[in-house]
Image 1 (cartoon, protein in one colour):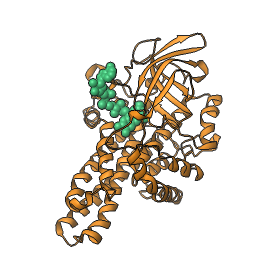
Image 2 (tube, rainbow, N blue to C red):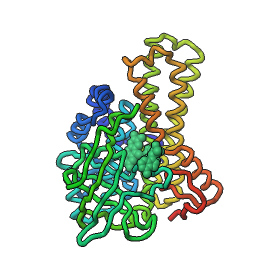
Image 3 (spheres, rainbow, N blue to C red):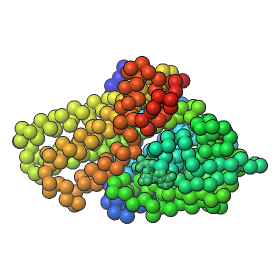
Image 4 (cartoon, helix red, strand yellow):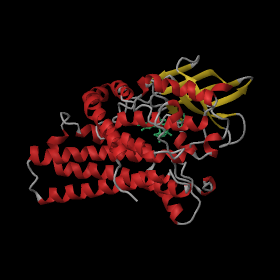
Amino acid sequence: MNYELDKQHQELRDKFRAVATTTVAEHARKHDAAASVPIEMIEALHQNGLMNICVPRELGGNGSSFVTGHDPLSFLIGIEEIARVDMGAAHVFQVHGHSCMMLDHACTPEQKKRYLGLVVEKGTPISWTGSEPGRTARGQYNLQSDAIKKDGGYLLNGIKNYGTNASAATWNIVALSSDQGEIPDNFLLVMIPADANGFEVDASWWDPTGMRSAVSPKLTLKDVFVPDEDVLVGPGYYPRERLGARWHLGFGASHLGAAQGMFDFVIDYVPNKRKTGDDPHTQRAVGEMRMRLAAARDMLYHAGSLWAGDDTAKAEEYSLMAKLYCIMTAEWMVSETIRVVGSTALLKSFDLERAIRDIHVHSTHANLYGTAQLIGRAALGMEFDATQQQIVVENKSSKVA
Ligand SMILES: Cc1cc2nc3c(=O)[nH]c(=O)nc-3n(C[C@H](O)[C@H](O)[C@H](O)COP(=O)(O)OP(=O)(O)OC[C@H]3O[C@@H](n4cnc5c(N)ncnc54)[C@H](O)[C@@H]3O)c2cc1C
């Protein structure tokens, strides 16, 4: 068992760090103010071969994946390094990476070339929209956007929201309820090109208090026709494969990165600017921050490594725990940091207030109570479904595969 990053991962971390501390840092305030896509980061990642970190190896990528189990760590390191500087930008990279992993699993060789070829060639990000208005109450497989089977494809209608990357993507993964089967067996994923007839992407919908550079538009589908060749496997594929359980760690990595970014600020600001490094309370707080960040990182990397093995239930449970601990660490860092740095550090001329807004918004994305409940069910020896983000009631749970 090795608890340290090997040379290959250290080099990769340094590559991501270089892009984050130069390009991402330089443009972060601009994209936060305008709620715009961090396009310079996408270009810089592409130039350094990092936009294809989750593209399968046969297409020239690194193949980092929680789905195949190949080298999950590389992707986590990338998210963490970007989130250390800009959590919104890290989500752009995260959604793109998750999309690449899923496409690697779902696509025929011809589809892979069509959708992922553009990533390798131009670094074009991919979007993935499951969310739609009111989904939280209904459950994530209970969608109102529908896909009606026609000759040669599906006719799509509905409204989706929170489509991170949709305003910059050429290909968009979109989830709908098909007219074939009951929930969740009718859950369908399709690929929609940006210029499809009847497909509208409204980026002006995205005006949140934090995570503003993770531009996540509203999508309107009016009689959009998707041919069979752009359907991912078919109805029921996604819940059947329990793929939703594979995305927890990305959220863990982004919260860990944002928390680490706050720590970077503290250990510079407190001794050098506020000049309170001699204060015993400050020293105690910094020590506790250091400890919690190290514990969160160890949990995250351990959970990531479990996807390379064959104990899926354990990988699911540890991923839930690592995500929850990283998010709780980030939230704890917000309240503790404020006490240690004082009010002047919260002026807009520092980047700390942006990190706090980002953590507030992003931590709502992953339902903490729902995550803790699933871990509790696992510990109590009950069935749990790590693909759910919502609180699970008895009749909605399912067996671990
Ligand atoms: C930074 C960020 C990035 C995200 N990126 C993605 C992404 O890339 N892909 C993705 O799929 N999801 C993404 N999400 C969305 C996330 O997965 C959740 O779907 C979302 O956070 C749920 O919001 P909510 O709990 O407010 O629920 P919702 O249930 O969506 O919102 C509740 C609101 O909807 C209204 N409402 C209820 N029913 C209806 C109805 N029938 N019609 C209209 N309005 C109704 C209610 O009045 C209430 O105001 C992202 C979220 C965040 C914060």
